[in-house]
View 1 (cartoon, rainbow, N blue to C red):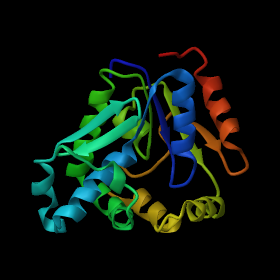
View 2 (view 1 turned 45 degrees about the vertical axis):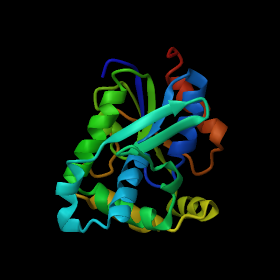
View 3 (view 1 turned 45 degrees about the horizontal axis):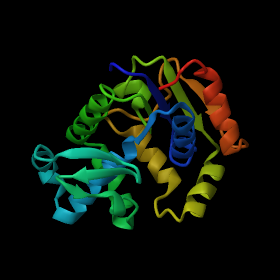
View 4 (view 1 turned 90 degrees about the vertical axis):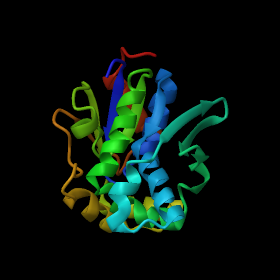
Length: 209
């Protein structure tokens, strides 16, 4: 890691993506969601009809690329734009399953660390401060009550269960969801988006791209 990295972790529907985008916009940093990388690979698994026992062999030949443009960032898998498919129901169902694979996590983590060599990042996920960038001094963990998070997912039209995502993310053998050492914990249950962004910015007041 040669640039500044702000790590924002937390369970599903805790507000990570929206808060990270707001913080990145204020600082002029690049916003990155590790979940998009896992979803891109999930799309590839669905597209190619990859069986679980073939995943490790398949993943070794995959190329992920984050492409920036004035219109926004796109995520390419083997040169094909995966971005339009990241919210497909079958992709959402698959993502936690493939995210449990060490080979998948190794590929995603390598891509995220490569981005930090050339960009200041606000990056959200479930193991950013604990595994991917444990050395960054800027770690945050967002949480909210299960009821509030389930309500948020429902408003988004999401098909996956918050309770099931929590179970899968917290019990997987590789990089389970946990509060990173030294992270600032923010309960977003009763806070608006701008309030949470303001709290995070208050802790990184001296950072600018």
